[in-house]
Length: 307
Image (cartoon, rainbow, N blue to C red):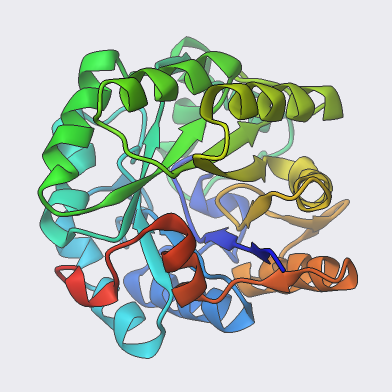
């Protein structure tokens, strides 16, 4: 029977810390959250880092070094490090953790795009840090830069370490970009395609959008890819359910949604993993272990990372 891979995005750059008291910020909180997600059934944890003092997204390897060894020591979960970081960071800064720690997986966005977070201002009025409100407000003029040259640089830079990629596709054109890099030999199959729905600037969350992305990926990659779905905000669980019913894999976590239901904040990443695991098991689907995910995604193994 097919195994379903659960990825948990533990903390990230698209939410500010004060929006939820449950979003992990310090290295200890991030390690605790990642280990908890793994214990709940996540085969993969996708990780960003935060400055523990001011809550800003950071790609400082020194901060990552405070939680990566503990996660590895206390779980066998696959660690997936961001190369996205934040839209306001340079490419060199964004790439530092992946180059230093040589993870089994790293995320990589397949194109430059508008990345609008300004609508959050209508839902959140109180902020813990003075950078948060202007950051959200200015996102109506924000471009998340990932040019063809940028993508090629990331792929070439990580090749020597054997790091493979969670290919994040926010719209149909990103699938064609992934196919382009597959044709160039900078990606090798099976590629792990994470289709992202619900970011303002990317594709929407209608079931037709999900079907269109899946049909396009099937046509471009055939059997040479592993498909997963990420729904932002309140679309997280409905789209994860749709992916599972269509034979896909799922991503949940507080990076993508702070919610456990209408008006109710999720108290932990582990809670979201538990919720989607229960749903998958109610569909008589088997949950992939970390080692099974490694086999499905052709990963190098936890003993080959540099942390």
